[in-house]
Each structure stands twice: as structure tokens, then as C-alpha cells.
Amino acid sequence: MTRTRIGFWVSAAFLFATSLFDLLLCPQSKVEESFQLQATHDLYYHGVAPALQAGYPSLWNHVEETVNVDYSGTPTHLPYDHLQYPGVVPRTFTGPAILSFLCRILLLPCSLLNIDADPDLVQFLARLCLLSLNFLGWLRFALAVDKVPPTSTPWRIGNPIMTTGSWLLVITACQFHIPFYSSRMLPNTFALAIVLQSYSYWVERKIQTAATLIVFGTAVFRCDLLLLLGTLGLSWLFRRELSIYSALKVGILTGIISLILTIPLDSLLWRRPLWPEGEVFYFNTILGKSKEWGLSPWHWYFTSALPKGMLLTLLLVPLSILPIAENLVTYERRWRQSPNNTNDRSRMIYRLDSQWLRFILPIFGFIVIYSLLGHKEMRFIFPAFPILNLGAAAGMSKLTYFAFPPRLESKEKHYFVSWIARFGFGCGLISIVLTLAGSLIFVATSKANYSGGDALRALSSHVQNVVVSSDGTVPPLHVHIDVAAAMSGVSLFGQRAAQTKTPNIEWNFSKDGYEDANSMTGQSSNGYEQFTHLLSEDPEIVSSSIFTVVHTQQGRPRFSFRDRKIVTEDTIFVFEKNRWRN
Image (cartoon, rainbow, N blue to C red; front, side, top):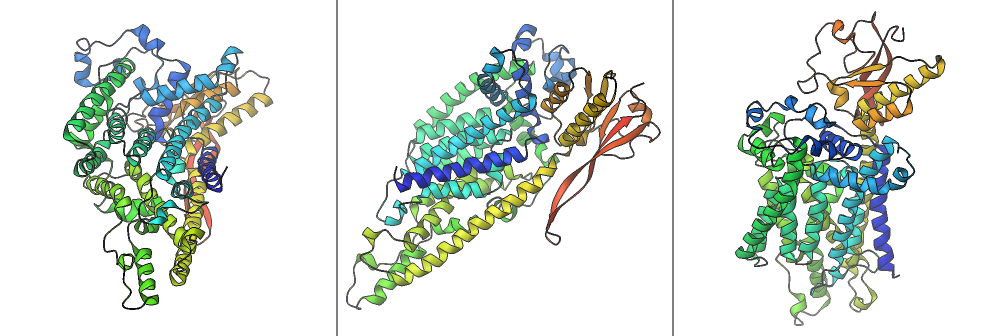
């Protein structure tokens, strides 16, 4: 194996290691991932058989139900969390179906031996499968980048050890958001795995295949990929890489096939005919409801999201398209040569490098168009990070070449340019290392973000201790989970894990009020007397004469630069009813 291949696979292993480290350090989830995670749980443990037995939903029989959009009218015998807690808009089951299927395959030996796999293990494997799908996308993208044929500018060949694809993997691994979210069950994460494959075909100039994947991702996972499809499509049409006829053919055929794949499964499980991403598009764009989740200034993506997402590696992106090093070489040649000795190689370059500009420009347009929408989140522009990281990798590859030129290219020495490039190369390495340091701080801080899940684990440990200290007879538990706890880590996997660790105890969980912002809050403590335990963010929600706090979970973390430590505060309180065992 050559040094180039060794460097590439070490870089790939580094990306996988950082993503896995984030998963191991933060194994729980938050509200943004709630639907995909709960759906994965339900499809793994229950499958689609209960929905099939209940019969396929009829369009005509459902007309009366859809008038009030009353999901509570769904048959209560179906063991699906989304029917009781549907959320604001429906999402597709395609991603959870894939993950649950992969988990069943991986845990097939347990099924054959009639062994129940630990729920925490199932959740970990599901997220690991999603991480692997995204990692394979990055690996495929980096391999495609290294296959780009070199042009007249030799630096595109790269250094014998670190190619542009290798730098792409290293830079991505040192950032926070992509490795951290690569295993998080967001529609954006599922879509990113498809977008990465599309970018790979784009780099290889297989435009129709690239367009097909983007259309599929738009129809099934994220309707906002339509903006990306628009900017990429215009670029392909302008560069004559795709004809109008081919664009229409790909769009129509792929769109129809995508709907055929997603609508039957989602209609079956949602118990009504629907196209999830169509409803999301109608709710957020046509009705303009997305602004209810908060508004940000038009420049937020450029002044906050990108600097936070890429940190110092963002400074490397302009180097990929600016001919700074090439012009410095020209200056040094002119200085060393006689005034009468001129040739084509001494001409200045006054244009941007089209080799990478053709990738960066459509992505820049995608971010600009997305900036016109009021509601903004970092995850909305995840499709931009692979190309921006490619730009940073190309910039680092250029610095590497001019700082340490291959021996075959060293007949003409450029000492001045070489020393400047080495200084720039050192600055580039420092920016990557500092980005990694910042990412580690982000990860360590994020670990305390899942206070609800941590509180549930603390309650499970407390109950186990009660069982050990008692005679073994413990009455059924009735646990109420408030909105804050449900949004910060409590999941069906966690609830099932608590039941598994105490098999002789009956656990009953309630999230009454979750769909209407915890409507029980503000009532007298009598409303909670039916429960034996509470997970609540309000320390005074019940009377101390009835309930006692047995655990206080820290959360809402922030990094204090002055104290150089992570600061948390009391977030979730675990209440236990006095004399609940009597």
C-alpha cells in the first residue's frame, strides 16, 4: 500500500473515530430527534404487522377525521408512539424502517437464541448504523475527489501523503457538527447521507445520477433540498452538463418513484393517506408557519452558523479559488529572470480557479436563498458543509504542494514562495488543531444537554436500590414525564431499559400534557397524586408533604471561559411520592 493510500485510510479512520466518540459520549437524544428515534423503536419491537392487521386507511373513510385532524381517534390498540404524540407535522418512516431492519440483522443471533437485546444496545446500534451510512457517504465523496483529473495547475495532484480527499476527511473530523450529528436521527442527517452520494457523482461528472439522488432526498426526507436542487440545476444547465429534457425526465420519473416508495408506508403507519414532505412543505412554506419557531436576521448563516460550524477551517475555503500562490510564483520568476525573458508561464492569473468554483458557487447560492427564510437553524444548511469542507481541503492541499513541492517539480526552485507557503501551511495546521480543540469543548458541553434521559436513568438506579433494600415486593410505578424532561433525553428506549433492569416491577409512564405544552402545570398537587414519581423542571410543582426530591439532574450547560470549565444548573428534579410503597 502506498503512502498516499495509507494517509487516506488513516484520515478516514480519524473521521469515523471522532463520530463514534461523539456517539459514545452523548448516546441520548433530544426533541428534534424524537420522532425518528421513537419510530425506530416501534418498528424494531412491533414492526408493521399491527398496522397491517388494523387495515389500510381509506381516503373516503378518513375524510371526517381529517376535518379536525384529531389523531386521538386512531385505534388505541396500535402500539405506535406517533399516534399518541404526532408532533406538529408528520415525518416519513423510511429512515426508521431502514435502521430497524439493519438492527434486526445485526441482532439476529440474539433472536435465534431467544435473548432479548438490551434496549440501550438497540438504540446504540441504530445510531451506529446511521453513523455508518453517513461515514460511507463521506468516504465515497473523498474517493471521488481524489479521482478528479489534474489540469495544467500541478498542485491539484496533491502531496504524496495527504491528498485533497485526505484533507477533506481530516477537516471534517476536526469540526463539531458533522461528526456529532452524523448519528443523530434527524431528517437532515438522513438527507445528508444521500446528498453526499449525490456530490460524489457530481464530482465524477455523472450529473443525471447526482440529480436523481437529490430529487429522491427532496421527496422523501427533506423538502427544503428543493432549494439545493434549484441552484445545482441552474449550474448544470448553465454549464451544459444537463439538458432541459434530461432535467425534466429525471425530476418527473424520480419524483413519481419516490412517492410510490414513501406514500404507502407512511400512509399505513400514520393511518391516513399522506405524503409527509408534502405536508411539511405546505405547513412551513405555503402557510408560513416556520416563523413561529423563531426568526433570525438574513445574515445569520454567514455571520453565525458557518463560523460556528467550521470554526477556523472556514478561513481555508478562499484559498481554493484565489490564485494567490500561483501569482507569487509568477512574481518570483519575474524577479529572477531578465526583463527581456518573458514567456506564457510568467503571466499573472486574474480569474478565480474554476476547478473548485463550479462547486462552491451553487452552494453559496443555496445559502443565500435559504437566508431569505426567516426561521434558521444550523442543520438546515448541512448540505453546504461537504462542499465548503472540500474548498478548505483544496486550499490546504494547495498550501501543502507549494510548501513541500514534489521532487519531480523541484527543478525550478521558488524559495520565497516556498517559505511563504510553509508559513501558510503552518497556519492551516494550527487552524485545524484549534478547530478540533473547540469541537472537543462543544462535545464535552453537549454531554450535559440530555438531562431528561439522565434523570430517568437516575430514577431507574434509585428504584433498583429500593428493590435491593426491600423484601422484593414493590408496587407498580406510575411515572409522569413533563415537557422539559421529554424534550431532553427521555425516550421509549430509555423507558424500556428501565423496565428491563427491574423485570419484577411494573412501570407505567405518562406524558400527559406533552402535546399541549404540559397542560397539567399550574394545577394543584392533587393532579399528580396518581403518580408515584415525577420528572419535572419545576422544583415547586408539588407539595413537599406529598413528594420528596430524590435526585436533581444538572443541565443547560455552558462553557465559562473565565473559569475554564463547564457550568451547569439544576434542570430536572426527580420526585418520589412519600410512602408510595404502602
